[in-house]
Amino acid sequence: MKTLAVDIGGSGVKALLLDEKGEPLGERDRIKTPKPATPEAVMAVLQQLASNQNEFDRVSVGFPGVIRKGVVYTAVNLHPDWVEYDLAGRFSEMVSRPVRVANDADLQGMGAVAGNGVELVMTLGTGIGGALFTEGQIVPNLELGHFRFRKGETYEEQLGRAALKKVGRKTWNNRLTKAINSLSRLFNYDHLYIGGGEVKQIEVELPENVVVVSNVLGLLGGINLWK
Ligand code: BGC
View 1 (tube, rainbow, N blue to C red):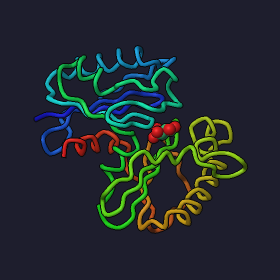
View 2: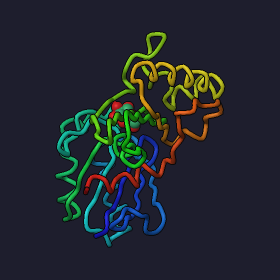
View 3: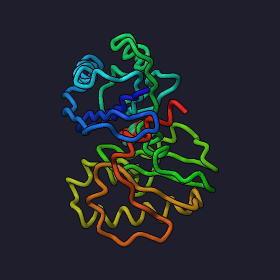
View 4: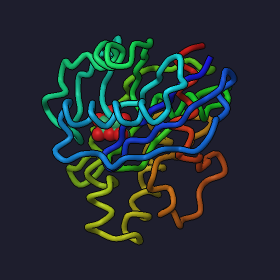
């Protein structure tokens, strides 16, 4: 049973084939996210990634927005046409295999957490994602990025890729420290995992219970949708 794990991001759409246990088979494939990232344009990329790897039996997708039962409800960093798009249904018709979809940070979190106590996940990419777990059970679609953080701005407005480009690495790192302090007081987590494409920009020392995790977990976490 082979799973094609897909991660739809604001800058790239990635795919990796996983074996029964969720171990990678082969190399990660990546295609730039089309602009504008309409459903039609992104579906064409998914078609391409799927045909590059024809040997899969089922598909897991991480999507940067709120997902309920395979349907998209928000897609702030892609395109408004995604709202109410049946991504699982349409992708499944396209590849004639079962497809399961979850929020990208939720999937990344499923790949990262240990299953003990309260575990929070934050992803740093184009957008800011969040996932909350207690004893390994997820509270889906946390949407941390769109919560008010400081100076009248959200976590995403202060820490997303656009902010990083605008204010530079040093200020962004200071903001990250403040974000960790604020999240720690809000969630009282046992562990915080930080993932996403921009973890490479982190240069501040992190508290003992905060761990940086690999961005590949956004793909590896996909196996959990079939457990
Ligand atoms: C979206 C989230 C997503 C995050 C990271 C945010 O803008 O609203 O659903 O998890 O970006 O991609």
